[in-house]
Image (cartoon, rainbow, N blue to C red; front, side, top):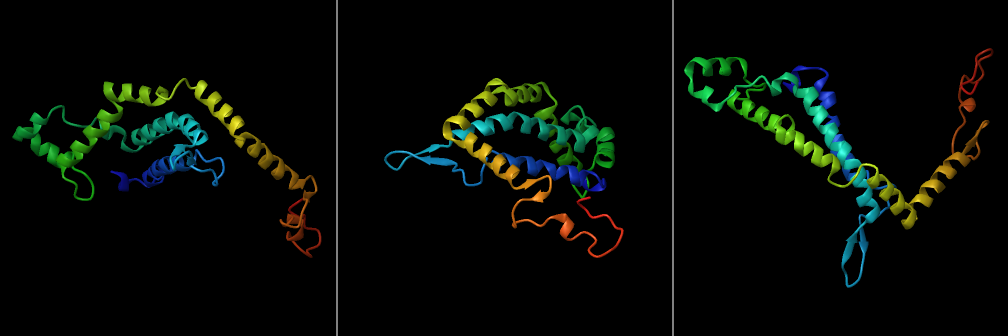
Length: 200
């Protein structure tokens, strides 16, 4: 299972990262509100956040599906064809021996989990659901255009351009233009004759 491979824990960590990114990705800036005050004490969802999430959601679902396929691999299909196999003593003993899980997970519990994952991503239902997740929010081009239009109308687009301009104005070909940052030639090999500095 997962703990038996040195590579799987690292891949597995990407899955919650995708979920966490889904929570914060709609925020071009951390200060952006998720809700917008309206009238009578009511609030509205932030249109910019919503349109940004629409762009991200389809790709996020495919990434989670890919992670499951990479981690679980052949375990998704190395399963009994029917629950009736449990009632056959000649087969059940081999299932208990060869299909058991790691960390004392019972073979029936492991098979149940693998069957659930396969239903979610590998069956006809799983394939139809993937298509739904990719497209339910709208055409993949339109949702991006709408996100751009929302950003322009809300002023977020101008803030993004201003941020890029501020970053570009922070340095030139000679280094930082203000005292906020430290140029690498100030700290690289000080006082060592004949040694090239980091900026060189």
